[in-house]
Image (cartoon, rainbow, N blue to C red; front, top):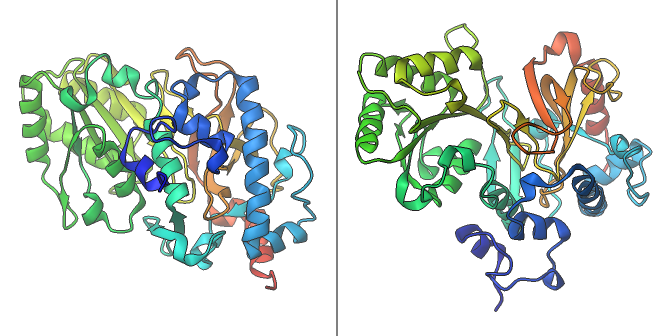
Length: 396
């Protein structure tokens, strides 16, 4: 029997190494994710061609296999069979993330679902996203397959032997259906990782001791967690005389939400970390942007840009009309992510920001996003709410 997508999740993601070819059902997108080591250095033209093909295939698949999405396309007068171009890509129907709080959207039979993930639910209701093996494998591959994504953090050291990860959050088992816990479990496959959150509590002192011991052992240390926990790590380490220099990086994830009534600024956090931990540079604080409805992560480079993987199309829309905004103009950040097979990951998010294009000094050519703030429902979500009502009124 041939290898499955589950096999790919548990090994280095190379289609060639597990003996799977496109003839066995894998697409050009899979070949890039699992077989190409430099996908994050793909030039703009090649990346555009990949998106057109992958998103077109995904739209046709979901319109045929997700009844709600098919009906939604009809209501939006969108024909999935019309070839996608740069000019009509923004016409692909996108789903407000609020819909995932009210409906169970699936494009595969329920017996193919292997995990259901939930959002943090900080605003009340939680999104529920159902993933099959293929969807999970693509997420895994997109986080682990490119040596360049994390290269300037890890340097030339051996990831398995010389990198130590301290996660200020729960293990996969403890996290249950929480999305970020699963993302962290993928990192655990690569490097020695300790999860410190138990029953909702984190022993920051233990984390500091672990980091100090790892430093004496010559390890490269990655401390990963929500911004407010990372800040607490820095605060409690401030009474130590340990200087971590270039041997420690702080990776934030989970959103820059308010803690204790005050928003956390990444710029302020980076400077605070530099001064309290004795870091060589504030660039040693990096962010990873993802949300449960997306099936790809945006990883911040050394220049501070949150780069989209080359297969994800970011569309910035006017918050009042939902028409595409002019290049460089702020608006609602929306996404077309073709890596999700079990559900249509064509979403209208709840963040306001901008899309930055053009080559980055870090060497990447993919677009990046800058998230400014969350939407205020009363001010900006009128059109998105209308789309939500339109989706909810679909007759099946």
